[in-house]
Image (cartoon, rainbow, N blue to C red; front, side, top):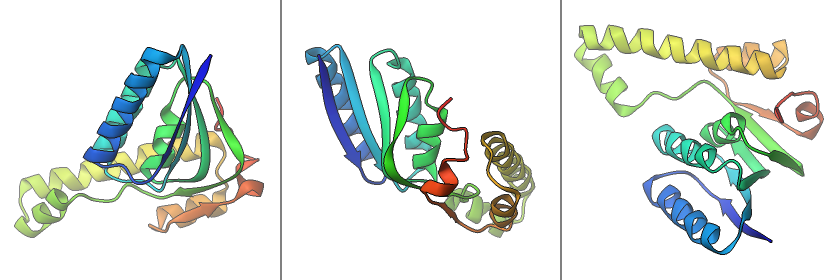
Length: 165
Protein backbone atom coordinates (compact mmCIF):
# COMPACT_ATOMS: atom_id res chain seq x y z
CA UNK A 1 0.00 0.00 0.00
CA UNK A 2 1.29 3.47 -0.92
CA UNK A 3 0.86 6.74 0.86
CA UNK A 4 1.12 10.13 -0.80
CA UNK A 5 2.51 13.50 0.20
CA UNK A 6 2.38 16.76 -1.73
CA UNK A 7 5.10 19.39 -1.28
CA UNK A 8 4.69 22.68 -3.13
CA UNK A 9 6.84 25.53 -1.93
CA UNK A 10 10.26 26.96 -1.27
CA UNK A 11 12.75 25.11 0.88
CA UNK A 12 13.80 26.59 4.19
CA UNK A 13 14.37 25.17 7.66
CA UNK A 14 10.65 25.08 8.47
CA UNK A 15 9.34 23.58 5.24
CA UNK A 16 12.05 20.93 4.94
CA UNK A 17 11.76 19.94 8.61
CA UNK A 18 7.99 19.66 8.27
CA UNK A 19 8.31 17.57 5.10
CA UNK A 20 10.86 15.20 6.66
CA UNK A 21 8.61 14.75 9.71
CA UNK A 22 5.63 14.08 7.45
CA UNK A 23 7.58 11.48 5.47
CA UNK A 24 8.78 9.82 8.68
CA UNK A 25 5.20 9.63 9.89
CA UNK A 26 3.91 8.22 6.57
CA UNK A 27 6.68 5.61 6.50
CA UNK A 28 5.31 4.23 9.77
CA UNK A 29 1.94 3.73 8.06
CA UNK A 30 2.96 2.74 4.53
CA UNK A 31 5.68 0.65 2.92
CA UNK A 32 5.95 3.02 -0.04
CA UNK A 33 5.37 6.74 -0.46
CA UNK A 34 4.77 8.88 -3.52
CA UNK A 35 6.17 12.35 -2.94
CA UNK A 36 4.66 14.86 -5.35
CA UNK A 37 7.29 17.59 -5.39
CA UNK A 38 7.17 21.15 -6.73
CA UNK A 39 9.62 23.81 -5.61
CA UNK A 40 10.93 26.99 -7.13
CA UNK A 41 14.00 26.59 -4.93
CA UNK A 42 15.05 27.94 -1.62
CA UNK A 43 18.14 27.71 0.49
CA UNK A 44 20.66 25.28 -0.95
CA UNK A 45 21.67 23.90 2.43
CA UNK A 46 18.11 22.77 3.14
CA UNK A 47 17.72 21.34 -0.36
CA UNK A 48 20.88 19.35 0.32
CA UNK A 49 19.48 18.05 3.61
CA UNK A 50 16.25 17.02 1.87
CA UNK A 51 18.12 15.35 -1.00
CA UNK A 52 20.27 13.32 1.36
CA UNK A 53 17.24 12.33 3.42
CA UNK A 54 15.33 11.21 0.32
CA UNK A 55 18.32 9.22 -0.95
CA UNK A 56 18.57 7.45 2.42
CA UNK A 57 14.96 6.30 1.88
CA UNK A 58 15.14 5.82 -1.91
CA UNK A 59 13.80 2.27 -1.78
CA UNK A 60 10.61 3.56 -0.15
CA UNK A 61 10.00 6.87 -1.92
CA UNK A 62 8.92 7.60 -5.48
CA UNK A 63 9.57 11.25 -6.36
CA UNK A 64 7.13 12.80 -8.83
CA UNK A 65 8.00 16.26 -10.10
CA UNK A 66 5.10 18.57 -10.91
CA UNK A 67 4.47 22.29 -11.31
CA UNK A 68 7.80 24.07 -11.08
CA UNK A 69 11.18 22.52 -10.41
CA UNK A 70 13.48 25.49 -10.23
CA UNK A 71 16.90 26.25 -8.87
CA UNK A 72 17.54 24.05 -5.84
CA UNK A 73 14.12 22.47 -6.39
CA UNK A 74 15.49 21.08 -9.65
CA UNK A 75 18.64 19.99 -7.80
CA UNK A 76 16.62 17.87 -5.38
CA UNK A 77 14.88 16.16 -8.28
CA UNK A 78 18.03 15.75 -10.38
CA UNK A 79 20.25 14.41 -7.60
CA UNK A 80 17.63 11.97 -6.29
CA UNK A 81 18.76 8.39 -6.95
CA UNK A 82 15.47 6.55 -6.42
CA UNK A 83 12.49 6.05 -8.67
CA UNK A 84 11.34 9.36 -10.14
CA UNK A 85 9.04 10.67 -12.82
CA UNK A 86 7.60 13.93 -14.09
CA UNK A 87 3.97 14.92 -14.40
CA UNK A 88 2.70 15.79 -17.87
CA UNK A 89 3.11 19.50 -17.30
CA UNK A 90 6.15 20.62 -15.41
CA UNK A 91 8.41 23.64 -15.89
CA UNK A 92 12.12 23.68 -15.03
CA UNK A 93 14.16 26.73 -14.14
CA UNK A 94 17.92 26.36 -14.34
CA UNK A 95 20.57 28.88 -13.42
CA UNK A 96 23.91 29.21 -11.71
CA UNK A 97 23.95 28.99 -7.95
CA UNK A 98 23.18 32.27 -6.23
CA UNK A 99 25.73 33.69 -3.87
CA UNK A 100 25.07 33.70 -0.16
CA UNK A 101 25.11 36.78 2.03
CA UNK A 102 28.40 35.62 3.58
CA UNK A 103 29.88 35.64 0.07
CA UNK A 104 28.61 39.16 -0.58
CA UNK A 105 29.96 40.28 2.79
CA UNK A 106 33.33 38.72 1.99
CA UNK A 107 33.51 40.70 -1.26
CA UNK A 108 33.16 43.86 0.78
CA UNK A 109 36.03 42.81 3.02
CA UNK A 110 38.26 42.25 -0.06
CA UNK A 111 40.29 39.62 1.79
CA UNK A 112 41.88 36.29 0.93
CA UNK A 113 38.56 34.79 2.01
CA UNK A 114 36.91 36.72 -0.77
CA UNK A 115 39.39 35.37 -3.33
CA UNK A 116 38.83 31.82 -2.08
CA UNK A 117 35.06 32.31 -2.30
CA UNK A 118 35.41 33.57 -5.88
CA UNK A 119 37.25 30.39 -6.81
CA UNK A 120 34.73 28.23 -4.93
CA UNK A 121 31.82 29.84 -6.78
CA UNK A 122 33.57 29.36 -10.12
CA UNK A 123 34.02 25.67 -9.31
CA UNK A 124 30.38 25.29 -8.28
CA UNK A 125 29.30 27.00 -11.49
CA UNK A 126 31.53 24.68 -13.56
CA UNK A 127 29.98 21.64 -11.87
CA UNK A 128 26.46 22.94 -12.60
CA UNK A 129 27.27 23.70 -16.25
CA UNK A 130 28.80 20.22 -16.67
CA UNK A 131 25.72 18.65 -15.11
CA UNK A 132 23.41 20.63 -17.39
CA UNK A 133 25.48 19.50 -20.40
CA UNK A 134 25.24 15.86 -19.28
CA UNK A 135 21.46 15.94 -19.17
CA UNK A 136 21.28 17.52 -22.62
CA UNK A 137 20.54 21.19 -22.05
CA UNK A 138 20.91 22.94 -25.43
CA UNK A 139 23.93 25.10 -26.26
CA UNK A 140 21.59 28.09 -26.62
CA UNK A 141 20.29 27.60 -23.08
CA UNK A 142 23.76 26.87 -21.67
CA UNK A 143 25.02 30.14 -23.11
CA UNK A 144 22.25 32.05 -21.35
CA UNK A 145 22.88 30.20 -18.07
CA UNK A 146 26.60 31.03 -18.27
CA UNK A 147 25.67 34.71 -18.63
CA UNK A 148 23.83 34.46 -15.31
CA UNK A 149 20.30 34.30 -16.67
CA UNK A 150 17.45 32.16 -15.37
CA UNK A 151 16.45 29.71 -18.12
CA UNK A 152 12.91 28.35 -18.13
CA UNK A 153 12.35 25.02 -19.84
CA UNK A 154 8.89 23.87 -20.88
CA UNK A 155 7.60 20.37 -21.71
CA UNK A 156 8.85 20.45 -25.32
CA UNK A 157 12.38 21.29 -24.04
CA UNK A 158 12.21 18.88 -21.11
CA UNK A 159 11.29 15.97 -23.39
CA UNK A 160 14.76 16.28 -24.95
CA UNK A 161 16.56 16.00 -21.59
CA UNK A 162 17.87 12.91 -19.88
CA UNK A 163 16.75 13.67 -16.32
CA UNK A 164 14.98 10.46 -15.36
CA UNK A 165 18.18 8.47 -14.93
